[in-house]
Image (cartoon, rainbow, N blue to C red; front, side, top):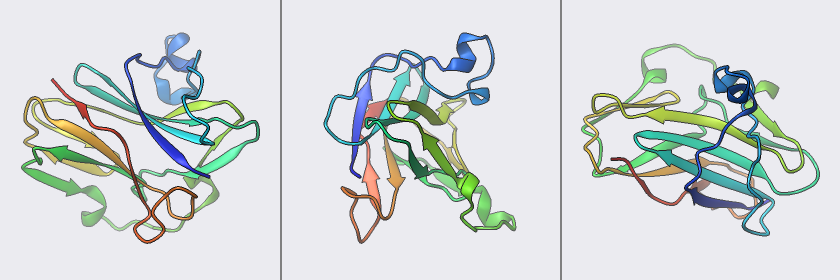
Length: 168
């Protein structure tokens, strides 16, 4: 399975948000745009002002499972200019790094789901277990997605990166 990174202008609305709830209660994207490629999975990075969202879209007809778990840090941000500090909350706590069934996001055929989000507040971004401090205005952001074992992903590093977006 291959992944394709897209930068999309339209901010996605989830099924939960359509009902007035926080997106995490049902992170499926309503009215998801069609796939722009022939790849089975698209990695979609959205930006709205100082907010970021990462969506995964299954471009096929059959369900797929993708490893994305905040405890395991499946995705992280690369910032340019670099943040003044980057802290990984897992470094100061004991946690279990076992990959479990709930570590995977299951996407039905044609489904898009938001898997991460962040908002720039006072020069800080929280992305999963990572907190980026001293983030400058006009910072370019790239998502690095760790996806070992998927076709189209570097077999040695397991890295897949998105397009750059700019925060105001």
